[in-house]
Length: 79
Picture (tube, rainbow, N blue to C red):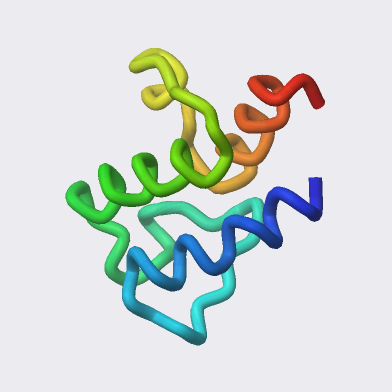
């Protein structure tokens, strides 16, 4: 879902305080500077608010990269 990924870009930039950041489906906490555990909590909260979804603990544990996040959002939004 390119639209979802496009909508995630400004969220990642704001939370990680990096206006030039570009994430793709393969991006993860291991590959993105500043994406630590506190940033992760803030990212999830911002994504839940922006997309009107809530993630279960099990879903969060299974997400390994931005692509997993995009796919989970799509499932929750019926896409």
